[in-house]
Image (cartoon, rainbow, N blue to C red; front, side, top):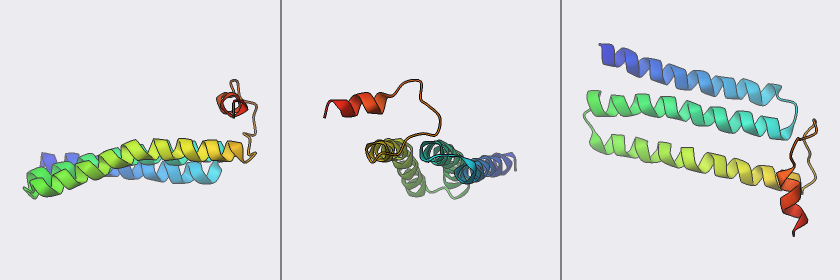
Amino acid sequence: MALRIVIDVLIAIGAIFALAGTIGLLKMPDTFSRMQASTCISTMGVIGVALGALLYAIFIMNSASTAIKIAVIALLIITVNPIGAHTIAKGAYRAGIRPEKRMETDDYGRDLEDE
């Protein structure tokens, strides 16, 4: 019974993070802020849901193969999501899209001057 509560809480936390990312995506002012909201928060949402699903697969379903699949999917999302966001941000910067507020450091600009 207590395990089921922990699983439900983890899945709910993941869903709350996903909802916060969706709201952030709608409310943020520029492209870079929207990408931060969608990437960071969705990654945190995947962590919560994946932990809940792992516990469910291991202790309730007694399925090691399902747990391994969930772990692999979660690890792929956790590693690929930030890399993809960085690539999209660099492409947007290269296309001429700039943040609404002036950046303190302009690492993308420094990187693109060399090309």
